[in-house]
Structure formats: structure tokens, C-alpha cells
Image (cartoon, rainbow, N blue to C red):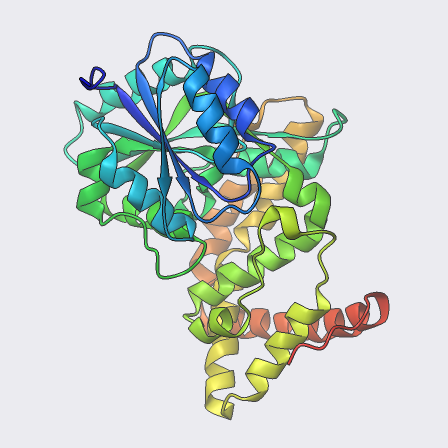
Length: 363
């Protein structure tokens, strides 16, 4: 049987129990015009009807679909998809991603290709982001995250924006780091930013707010911050001792913070005094370096109340921070103050969560 024509784009989607998302994913892709693409579904061990639905929908659509059995872990799954992709351009997409217009992919591909042709270094692109929520009531919190996704900082780029880049760029920078079960998107974003550059595409992608709405927005952001800090300070024991931290979305309900915070307490208690001191100092430096987000929140709030789109936030407070505060935030005194504040916060949250949440034995 002859192969279909070489596609313009290979779309790679990691799957794990995504039976509810697949029909809409196939529909949003079927609606795309003026582009030839293939869809590579990389299943990491689904236990629901994901595989059956993928096969059925793949046979009903005009674009080529391939279902791959891969090791679990999104990094491994997406690396496996990239290994068999036929196009010169790759798009790493989440199963809950949707496109708002039928020409989104064609515009994105043309935009990236045109800028690649005049660049002497690796270039990758991501979409502007919008959260699909159960309610249409405006939310400053979600607006803040949508606006932050438009910033050029490597720390603001996440996989739910979709990563579009050439195969050569992907191979040259070393593919996804699959040494951890998650955060592969953040690590790739940092690598690309340091070796090349990121483009913000002029078109938008939407992603489900299901995890935030189910688990609680504040609770999920606290967990995310703890995870990112553990990576930033090189605390690999954290991930080995708490393997159930980042559960599949189908297994989650309202997040309980006490098991996580108490687990951190227990792990730190096993450290020597010097190890604890080093950990808290590194945490203080990380928190201080991210204090710019407080000022960006002020800018986002002003833009939100002015009904501006997230990409149009004026960085007045943020620029003031960069001019007057940024040179000092990584100094030892500031890092020490931030470290002390985080330790106090950790103790206070432990006490609060112990009283408000059912106690689960951590170890």
C-alpha cells in the first residue's frame, strides 16, 4: 500500500485515559483547512476506552492517524512520536487542546516557517493561550495566566500552549528530557530559550481548565510552585519519595495539601543541618527571582479591568520592578528574607491544613 503524501506537519499527542477528550480533539483537527498533517497518538498505558476510540475516529477522518504504544511519561511518549513522524515540522499538542478557527494551523505554520528562513539560530513557536472553563464569568486569575503565557520569559512557556518546531531543531537541542515523569515541557522550553528563541504565534489555542476547577486553582498552583522549586534547587529525592504527587487528571479530586507539606517536612528532617541550610537558601533565591510576578499581577489586573486582551497587558509595574528591584532580588540578604518567609509560610500552611483537611499518613 503506497504511503500518503508527505505531510506539512506531524501532530504528536501523548495520551493517558483521554476517552472524553478524543472526539473533540479529532473534530478540531478535522476542521483545519489548507494544511496536510498526520496525527500521531502516543498512548502511555490507558486503562479506559482511549485506544478503541482512537482507532474508530482515526478511520473516520481524512487525515492519517497512527496509534503508538509507548512507555508511560509524556516526555517518553512525545519522543516516541517524534521518532516516527514523517513531516519536517512537528507540533506537540495536548489532548484537551482546541483551535478556535479553521485556519489556525495553516497560519501558525506559515508564520513560523517565514521566520525560520531568516534566522541563524533555532526557532520554536507556541500559541497564545485561552482557558476553557465551566463558566463564562470573567476571572482575573485565569486572565493572569493567559497574559503570562504571552511573555517571552522561558519560565512562562508551558506545553499546553502547543510547541511547534522543526524536526532538525528538535533533534539538535536534544529532544524531551524523560528523566522525570513530568515537567518535560518546562525543561524543553528552557533549552530552546538558551540555544535559540521562542515565537508567540498570532493565533490562539484553548485548553481545558479541568484540573484547576476539579482540584482548586490555588491548591494546584501551590503544588505546581513546589514542584518547580524542587527542580530549580535540584531536589531529586522529592520526586523519588512522592511518586503520587502528579496524578492523572481522571484520578484527582480536590487536592489535599497536608500530605504534600508534611512529606516535605519529613524529608527535610532527614537532612543534615548543612543540607537544610543549602535547601532553604536555594529556595529563597528561587522565590526572590520570581518576585516579579507580583508586579506583573498589578499590570494584569489593570488590563483585566480595562477589558484589554491578555496579549495587550502594558508592563508598567513590571518595568519598574526590572529597573529598580531586579538588580537586588538575587542578593544574599533578599534571598535570606525570602527563605525565612517561605519557611514561615510552610509552617503556617502545615498547621492550617492539619486543621482543615483529613489527616493522611505521609510515611
